[in-house]
Length: 151
Image (cartoon, rainbow, N blue to C red; front, side, top):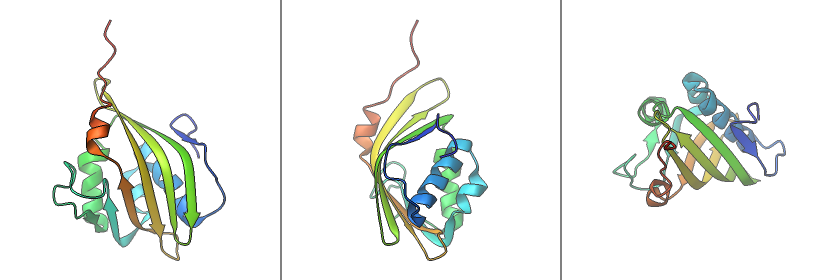
C-alpha cells in the first residue's frame, strides 16, 4: 500500500485483481480522492456499507451506479477527517476478495469510531469493482465512539 501510516496490510498480498482493487479503494479513501475512488467502480456497481438496513441505508438496498456511490462518498466518506485501515486477513478466490479489517475514522473535533468488518470486493474481467459488500454491525461500531482526550 502507498500510505503505510494510514493502511496496514497484515494479510496475504499476492497479485489478485479483487485484492488490488480493494487496496486501491483504501488508498483513494485515505487520500480523499473521490474521482479516483469512483473510477475503480464499474458503471452499474453496487456498494453495500453496511450490508442490510442501517442509518446509512435505511432500506438496505445499497447504492448502485456512480451517481449513488458518489452521493455515498459526499454524505459519509467526505465527513471523516482521517481514515486508518488495518487489514488482518484477506481471502481471494475467483472474482472476489474478502478482507478482515478494522477501520478507524477520526472526525473533526477528534471523535473516533472503529468499525470491525469483513469487506467483500468483487471485480469484473477488467478489474473494475462490481460490488463492495461491507459486513459490520452499526451498534458495535457506535460502542467504540471516543471523544477527544480531556486535559
